[in-house]
Length: 364
Image (cartoon, rainbow, N blue to C red; front, side, top):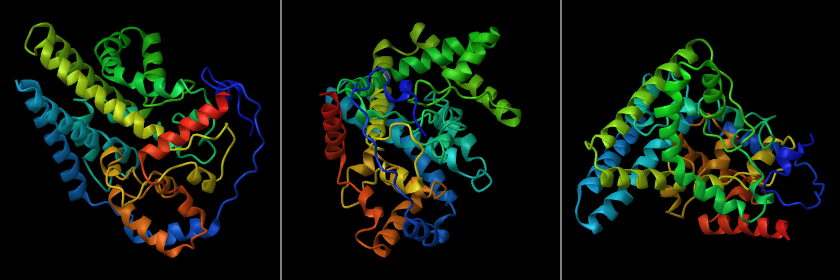
């Protein structure tokens, strides 16, 4: 399928001739092995989910409190780093929430929203009903994918802009929930725009989400209202001095750091080389990234199973705690020339360099 010019040659895209590429056929041996060797790993572990998510959130909030109240610069820096990493891990459970069968983990979505989603102004509906489109075989890498842009084919300046703009995420979320959301309840036209354009964690500017229906709409409105009340209360506490400007600034900086870290992870989650055509599952896998052990740092910048992002695209229903074992089994079973091994990379620097060099070559 041909991609549209607006998607393929967006504002940051390099104006270079497009080269025809042969489609990548599905490797049936790899797909069969991935499915057959992981059937016993599909069940989530509720106790682990709850302990990991809640523990990460509590550590993050405790570190945030220390950072806001400490007087020593060294303590503030150390506490802020701990807060960023812990809250980032807790926040990334939104990815699990968007994939899980909620009957297998009853109450987890509500608990995550209460502990993480609403306090950090990133409720689950920002990903639910959106992220699943990224996994649709006919949507991945096309103009209809909310989470895809051909970043590797754009001009070099687009990459730092892509990263740096995420630092403003806390401000954008405050505006979304403290101002736009309340106004949208009394201005019908604004409500439609807020839901379509400002209620999704998407990077494709063309994406418009559909209005939820039925039970999903009730849950959307309820969670939206809770986040709005919290955002207004937060602004009011800062305005009245209950929360000092210094404390708010430190919290804002921590929130910005979380957003930037997530944007860097997003930058290296895929190779971003597709120009809009539909892709086979194997092609989607090869356009995605695994950063398996022995590297240790990916456990911090791509936690909750996201260091196995390519494998996740093969087996999107596999719980995060099973991905490491699944990778070991599949890697050991498949021949060295299997496409499975071609999606594994050593670490963050090499991946950033790869996409950076791609934009430089395209920009010439």
